[in-house]
Length: 134
Image (cartoon, one colour):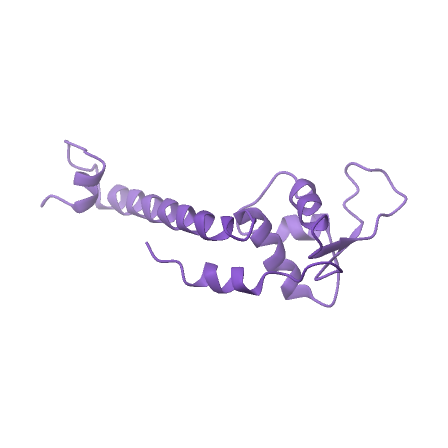
């Protein structure tokens, strides 16, 4: 087996156990590189990848609303709790929420709508995220 670029990059001396192992590690490395580039690009818009994911989901449901549970179920990278990223998006304005009278925890029934009052959802951030280069 010939020496691979990945093997050199991660400074692995022994051969990979299988071609599948090498492919899996290449996928992980590529995924990590893309996430780092996305994180840097979104930082200029004061967004995290999780917040971008929430905005992407809300844009897809606009003008309708979703519950926190609905948003959590649609996340590309699942998060244990989508409330903190929603709180951070609600303050500057691209997300608006209506609170129900039910329990604060575990309900997930409060409707969440995107593109509420305040500053508009960052269209430039979407363009930035779609043009990531390594």
